[in-house]
Image: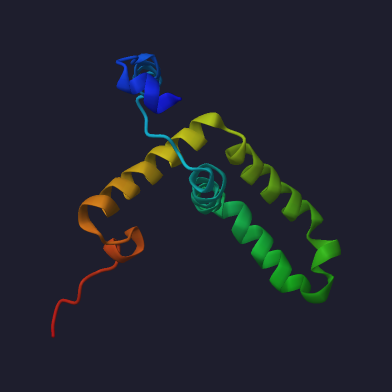
Length: 125
C-alpha cells in the first residue's frame, strides 16, 4: 500500500516523516539508550556529586561491620535522598543525555570507546 502511494507520487507519508524529524532536531534515542545507558551515566555522575554522603555511608559501613544495616540507617537515608534529587532532576537528565550524545558522536568519528579515549598514553617505551 505504502509502496503504491509512493510510486504514484503521493508524498504525504514522506512529508509527515520529514516534518516529524525536524520537529525533534535531536537524534532519536533508542530504548536502551534512554532507559539503560543514560541512567547508568546519571548514577555515576550522581555518585560523584554526592561524594560526601557516599564517604560518610562507606565509613559507617566499614565501622559497623555486620550491624551496618541497623547502625547506618541515617547515613543511608541521606545518601538515597541526595541521589534521588539528582535522578529526578530533568536538567540533570538533559545534561547526562547531552554528554552521552557527545560521547556517541566521538565514537562514531574515532571508533575509540570513551573509556579508552580517557586513558593516558604511555610516555616512554
